[in-house]
Length: 261
Image (cartoon, rainbow, N blue to C red; front, side):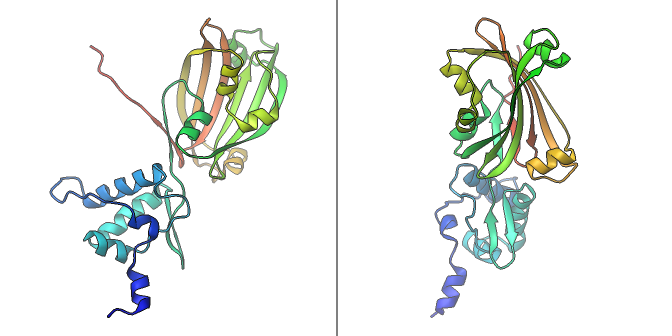
């Protein structure tokens, strides 16, 4: 009979024991990749939550009938993505899911909330400023005229994911920091009777400055995704110009591509 200590050592982690893995050994897709994809899906769907333990590689390899190198490669691929972390004396632990956002006219806050990412917001800046050349062109106002500038730090599960800078036409809607920190900007617009209709958006990438890295809990020079967006209401009026940066380690954009015929 196995000793109690042996049973504790070989038992899978509670969160992982509820998962049903389906591995196709006849598929050309490597087994490590199949396992990694299913673990990643469980993390994204919240089945495996931040802080959950996966147990050790021996337990998982025995349970799935896989070799230790296969399990190790699957786990390492998710460690490299920042979804898992190996902690000495603790084991492999879920850190967070990567935010995958569809390319559509939606609020980051709404997307994160719908994905169960527990978004929170910190207002860094909220003041009236003279419109720069770029802001004036985007909003269709005279250069130097007064616009509302917002800068917010968005977090999920307590960790930074994006720094959002937005510029709005003057007197577009009533804004206060308490509401800005409790909900999304687009939700506030809808509540004020503004109907968002379309947007022009540009996506890019660059390295983080020292200040940006400090705010986003990254290393200086880390990869950032960038987005510039001008949103229009159903009358064709520009109602928002945003310049946002996102942690590439925690954030992706999803594209659906259609064949033009």
